[in-house]
Length: 285
Image (tube, rainbow, N blue to C red):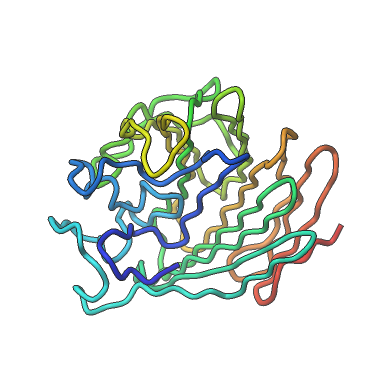
């Protein structure tokens, strides 16, 4: 959640990586060092990370075109610090909440994660002074196929977006489930789309091949799953299965400035969560 104090950090406040069974299933951009031609126009963009991009622009301090790979807070006489609201490791579940209002002027990003024994629940609140284009993204590692009924779409030529290929708008209206990855490590995410939102799947640039830093397996190509909507107060909800059982997100009630209630079902068991505006999440049943 910040701050951004060195050039080898990405504009990726509230970024989330997910690993299952010792294998990475979502990831940040994989590049060939600082000399990679995509370092600035892909690796140093927010859309290439697993967080929310506002108005198609990277977060501060990479919110403008620069030829320097070492851009950081002190170069701009500003700060990108966020705030840890709380961190609660518990027996039945663990939870963390952080927010950042400095990487996009006039906009607050607020993310809460709950980790149980069988799934991760992600509640991402975005509040802004005026309506903005908001793109919630996650980058899936491994093979993935677009659902039937998907159709081609354009994502634009802004930094980061120009490198995503074969973009398809998914046929989801209110929610959807995506599976991906190799046969021996299938992963799954269930999404609830905000009102007026649409889901998009696109191919990321080919990853740099070759093992590094002690990796045991060759890296796999990555793909962008994006939920995009225009608004000033938007709630994104997703759940990630940590077992072979499918996870489903049912009822979602609330908003960015009110308590949020979410129903999650795994293996026929219903969990009912409440995320207050102030205080830690509560498992109610």
